[in-house]
Image (cartoon, rainbow, N blue to C red; front, side, top):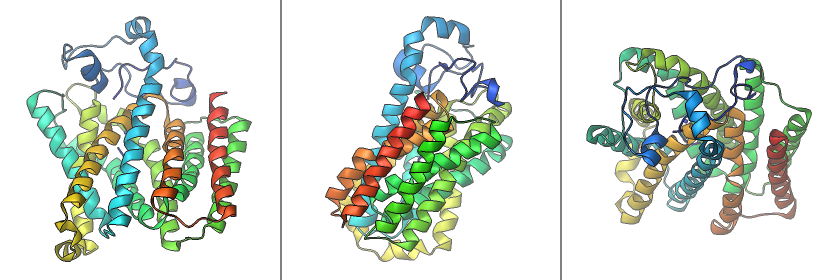
Length: 368
């Protein structure tokens, strides 16, 4: 969310995997990849060159255990970075009462862009040379990416973390519906039952929420729609974008740079449109060193989310990606209730727990 942004070694899915295989009308993301991936560089060094051809069949035979652990490793990395960033953003927006969410997003994405560019120049990572055709293909994804981050910022300001967790379940439902129509991916009866429970929990949680805020809920519902759209659109565009690269593929670092770098002019426009610049010049909170430490840390975590989210999406699929995006907030939602002293009624607590149960039931249904 916000924000987040999409990384893996060679895919470990079978060709009949319903989430990514050709049976649902789409092929595995980035098949026949010719550039080394981020995890190749992190865990196997920089021995492979940019033009090295990766043989998928050989990788599957030689690294079976690595393929099986890919979803677990990528999911864990995504959960840790996402949970940490949610807490820090909540501190900046609520505890410091910072009312410039777009500006915070701009700062976070600027940090990510600078780091990726520096890593590219130093040769630590390989960054695809950007061109207008590639940028033009990626702009729709980037617009959704920016909207997702902004809506997530504002929803987190007005809605407590526990309720954000429950309302995020709506994203899973929207993503599953999108997969059905776009990728012809059908869900089991158990999955649809779990999603029905998610709807009930979201409605009951909203009704019993003592600190209910209409504006905050509107932002959160918008964020659910945008998050589902982002994961579905990203999955399609990644295959299209590689056609406009020199190597015939688009590595994960380049995707992260595209998302963050292209977001800067759009964010600058929104800052001017929302008149945030005048607010920033007059607010006292930006004079506090601790504020900048937390804001910078959230920017670094934003970069981590950009890598891990695309890594995890590659390893699984849009529905699983959105599901874990909700489930990883279960422990953080409980911490949020305590750390931010959220007013809580017994019916609301029951609704939240029911929502968490619905999320767990959904996960088990997906695995069956």
